[in-house]
Length: 368
Image 1 (tube, rainbow, N blue to C red):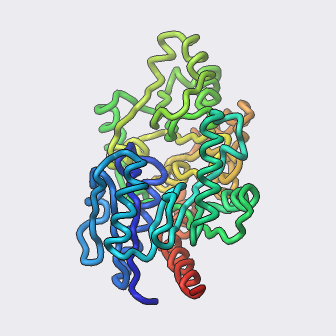
Image 2 (cartoon, rainbow, N blue to C red; image 1 turned 90 degrees about the horizontal axis):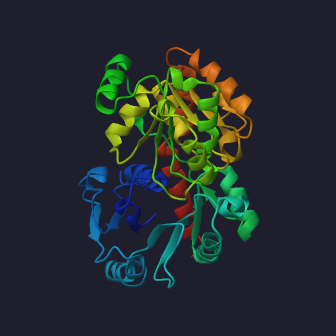
Image 3 (cartoon, helix red, strand yellow; image 1 turned 120 degrees about the horizontal axis):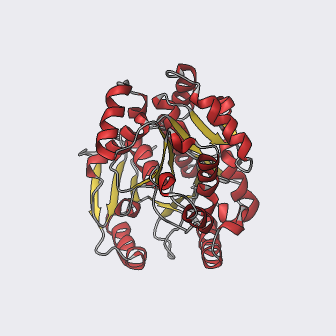
């Protein structure tokens, strides 16, 4: 394969950390090891330089504005033409005018599979923009078999390539549980806590978890910790929370603006990780929890059904009794499950995703 120039839109790094930032960071940390190609990373803040480091085949570019319209209509076309880019990689939405070959990663189309959980304006705009992007992109990527099938079904494009998400190697590193737990207690005032990491949307099912936590009286011995950006308000959660006593409310903690190292520490210090989401295009927090060795309880719906190795930790996200069963089971578990960690390390790593990515590029090159 000849030397290629890749432009990567990293505008997601200008906002709070989310799944797309993890995806770009993990995939391209592996891809830049290939010195045959040059990679141009662009954002408004350039706050990701520590993520990728300094390399001969890496160049950092800065957008003139944080405005997405300026970025898509002015900055990106200017960079692509000036640098003679071969492929430009975007998350979800590509620019309206084609200046080189575009790669788009569509992580999920859950707003079409589960429309009741999304506002009307969101559904209408995203459907049009996703359809535009999928139709015009040279290469369409996604992160799971579930998401691929949904994209094929809704947008009638069969050549969708799966570049699976992966778990950062730091989650597999050894650590002292007691030391971490003491540090977390000192920093945040929490101990023996259940942890749910996800942005806030109705489909994420925060209200379902809260109800089980309260009605099964877990608040008497545990904290419930939520970490995630407020995206779409969950009215059911807010209404239920207001009915709780002050004793209960004190045991429900909302942590935000944690950096990566702080997040890893909170995951390591947890008693249980619980992921009750009704629908996901992938769902990486359950894997990260399993990798660090804490019991990981996860909904068995949509893409999360692939996590068969969690076994008794899987539950029906519409059945409160089944979640309680999983919690009871999880609280009995002690020590790290090395078998599950090994499965995750082998199945979900960025080397695999990078190999699949380069194969898709190579096949696209053959179409010339």
